[in-house]
Image 1: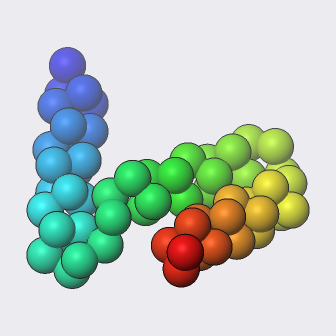
Image 2 (image 1 turned 90 degrees about the horizontal axis):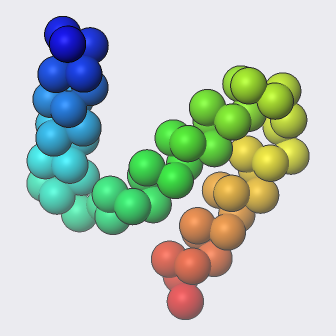
Length: 60
């Protein structure tokens, strides 16, 4: 139970930081998930493609 509570608190803190810095939380969450996938699959290309997609989406 402690792990779930900590995860929820960390996510709320991350949302607060994103709001104060003017960063979209969804974009940041997608990048974090791509890093997890990179570590699991050992695929650098996947992570780089995700970064490029988010940057392109933000600049449009």
